[in-house]
Image 1 (cartoon, one colour):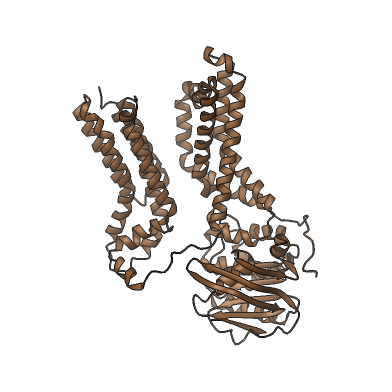
Image 2: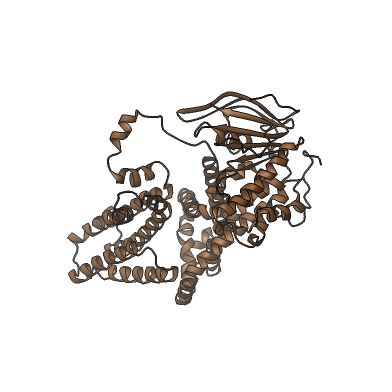
Length: 211
Length: 365
């Protein structure tokens, strides 16, 4: 991984994780700074697992994770308030309306930007989907709701796993525009995991290739 | 903007985690009531005069056991365990396992999660709790002679049962939560040639492996537990002094429940996998048949055992044949009709189980 251009926002030290019979990370170290980092690698190289570990969805065997100096093991709640994970699948919480889901996140994240929600809903063409339960949305629409949440939660670090999955052309273009802006942000760290090369219209600060 | 600022609790329009869980639970409850509400109402109306006896019956064994400390302890434990198991069987409604990973990434205070779990369990326990409390009140109001010496212990034992069942169910739910969000399990890799040689038949890939490897965990659990329960009920006349007629009636109601439950879970957990195999050179009917067999095998084994004691008992042959015919036909219709709407299905369930139990009660003169 290239050295980060700016101060570290997310630090990973000596991360060890293995699925039974399949070791994946053995002493992984990484420092992620502000802007956009593109994590790439072949299928099964551990991109999604790395993001889940960073987000706290999976528990490492050992190692230290810190976001803005907050240790995930020492202060798990403060850590999670500063990191948001958008997974590669459709969003759960199927019984909630999209608006209720945003309300739920608003209660959890102190810097949730409720004013920006409307802009992103328009960008993703989601405005007329607000009154529909998430479970009744198409896979792509559910992904867009989750991505909208990622754009508005206001966390120091946002993790997007295969964000282009299931998106239509317009939504994909809109997301690339937002990622391009994210790449310019120095106060936030955006980490995108994808099996494809970074899009040409997105400025990527760092790339991390998993073997 | 400070990224590490403290959490404002007064966000307008914010929804708490407990409310999210409550909404999920009440949604599931309203779906249940839409399907079964009519029959519950009819049942309550029919049981009208017998309702007090029914309510009292729920606590009768517990109160009977109060005369001896050892039996009281055993009864409290068995009651608590049974109620906890009942609550555990509805755990997918109380907390959907699909939420496990995402929940771990959200900054939800552990206390809120615990409180939400507790609230959902209490909500689920409420109907039974009300029924048992009403039964206890009835027995204490018109106290029978055998209860008088230990009447003071009755409310305490009921409280202990409720506390114990909630405690056990909470422990189970926390264990399930940890298990669901734990590391992905996989076996040590076997040599590829051995794996290829083992995968010889589609049934291994599409039925046995999903059941063994946790793709369809609830189906596997229901088939195993249901099969075990049916065997116990079928063997009741042999193992204890329970009359054959009562055992057969209990068996026919339980077998019907097991068939419906395993079939519903197999549809839920295995059908998506089987649907994905449509493009393969596989007979769709064979897949459907395999799923049906999964629901049918425990019930058929149980039926064979349940009919064994009848070899030595005087029976009405025609009624026996009718009972077997009706039971098998009802199971067959249930397993063959995948797309019937909820009302049709529940009507058929109620009628079939009523007919089957009625015939079972007439097999032995």
